[in-house]
Image 1 (cartoon, rainbow, N blue to C red):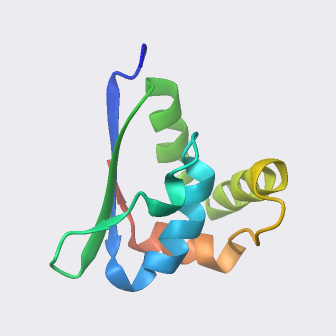
Image 2 (tube, one colour):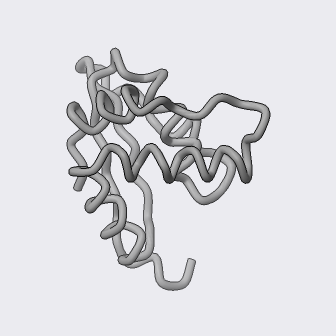
Length: 102
């Protein structure tokens, strides 16, 4: 895992688990993103993963731009998950409005 010098943590209300799974599928560069969020037992879910600095920065920049996250998800779904439905813009907005990303 050369170059994975950062850790990305995303915390959300558990009520958004289905949306988190859809977005996690796109933002995880391997195949496990849909299952990346786990319950913390306090009404929240969290994903914590090592990543490269440029990747963390890109996701942090998307935090204030739901349209950018939505386009990213659409492109990834078209490439890797063509039989599944990508998250909607509204779902990306909900995700980012509730997410604590650091």
